[in-house]
Image 1 (spheres, one colour):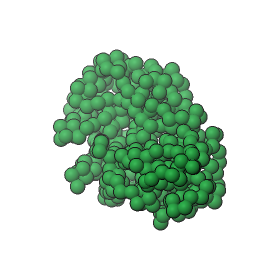
Image 2 (cartoon, one colour):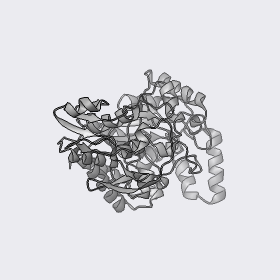
Image 3 (tube, helix red, strand yellow):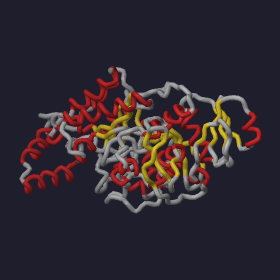
Image 4 (cartoon, one colour):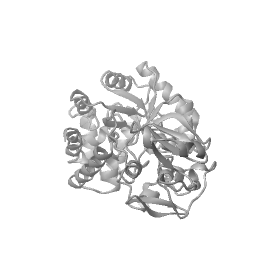
Length: 424
């Protein structure tokens, strides 16, 4: 049993200690009575300014005892031989974990891209070149090492989870006369004759739709992988261009896939701003598959703290898979372990479980401009980090990216390479 002393017991402190110790199946007792603590017999940690003889001590910054979201002067420090965050001249690994895990830096920031997203390149982890390291897990392990406590850091419930966002069920099929005619006219005017011919061949039945890669997804499930799909069912708009949820062929496809894999909601681009659409889209999916929906991932990975997650909780979503960046790969929350979301606006832990992902196909190809060989090297590195520090290896692909068309030629091999890592 580990005994921990703190002059103040706060929700933030308990949350952080649970992540460090309970995640790794280590029991601890938190104590704010210094007289009683001094008399205890066993492994002890002093997390306070008070001095105790022969007891390991970590000097706390104010962060875990503050009630509000504040700005801190962040610099690079060192704890037990590991890079760590220094808060206003205090190196505090516990505060470092909470700061990154809670995504405190994202609450009041004005650093957003054209989609309203906080970009990875503006994060603290990226600033210190830590973004491809599971820093919250590394700091947890450093604390255990500091206390001479051994633990199996790998989660017993490890998942190797391929996930897919179905933004556009088909490239050309079932788009209707008006959409198809306008697309044909556009391609004819702009000189995209290859795409024009491809559309006509698909619609006439001579060729398979390039986004129809559901056989590959089903094959993945048949090989023993759990597969999770997130389906976009928002009304047609600039950034929401899937088939109508009312289309019989679309509904038939969703039901077919739901018989084989699990499906969650992919809330539309506009649902981040308008609560009504989120509720509506969840109801649409539930009606189609005749099941309750409890899993979600935001379209375009749009997250606005705390509103996005509060809306999911209000709509009975229990698990979210948005925790990652579009512009960089790695560990947005500093971990590959799932964790309960801590709402800084209420200063309390919630029921929403967050499942971080390590990379997205579009990040490797479109944002980082990697070729397939370079992408494999990057994925290998991320896999080794998760394998060493535990958690779940979750990654995002799209049905269209498996089709090997145009900029995605050669990338199906990258997908299969990722799957093969499970056995290595």
